[in-house]
Length: 428
Image (cartoon, rainbow, N blue to C red):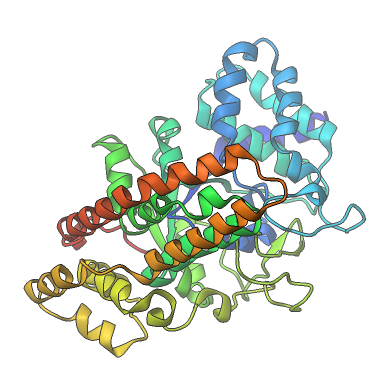
């Protein structure tokens, strides 16, 4: 490695800060990350960093500080889909081996990471190792020279934060992505269920516990974050609302928060310099069938239409009753005039309405029931009937009535935890 390159790498590592990107799920973190693919002051891979912690836990105690080169070589497998994005099986990028994407130099990556991990005085903290991995990859890309100020660590789910949280510094930042609550629930539940159904994973597609999990993570991101920190230090955290990202002014407010230069015009949604396709869980068709569908912000993808048509009157009204303060706080108002009126009702009136509606099944729960009947028929009529998928499916069906009751308890509890707007995460 050239001395000038190693000095530049050292300088960038020391001066740059970390931005951790978190989400409630199906809230646009992949899209947001793709907007910064073209920003010269942001270093990232194009994939999520959800497996970095398990890799560091496994190999750092064994190999560091004595064998950093071996550690760096093993890290290439961790970033396999960034080194060879055409093999991607999760995000649905649809790149081919001959596409002219930004290509990383594997040898340079290993040299970069070996150098950073061999520096004297660099503590082998998980967050610094993760930062070194991402920066080493970024600096090995075949693209114009740049000097990133931010290293983007896309952890995705909030529950992955505790491993890194003790090592965050004052200069670091956290972004939590969310969106319109009605769309968030619909996308988080139905997109995954339809995906699992198409894959033949009937147990997961019919598991009502996933619905319960989605409701909890969608509405309680601020509580999850507070529960993780438990009074310990947490750097400045901001909430980004996907529905508002259509505005370049809103996006540049985020840039100001990150202390990087603003976009002169709305950036394209790209992966390694090429137009990005939506992931495979998304219900949207591939970009090659709809030219330009993900080249930038597309309102038709983000806004799923009238919330009542998506979730039904009961579900929407329960959300409006319990989470009116959050809806008003973030100014993401429902399209339905009925739901707007519910949001503006006094707390006692909303609680009374919810106590009546809570006894009825929601449209989503009825979908789970119809999906279960369909899946059972597919399993029984399959020519290759296997006992394990059938047992897994029957196990889920045994627990679903219990989950149905727990969902009612969770909805009642949500009134208590959604009334204090002072603990909501602020926008930039």
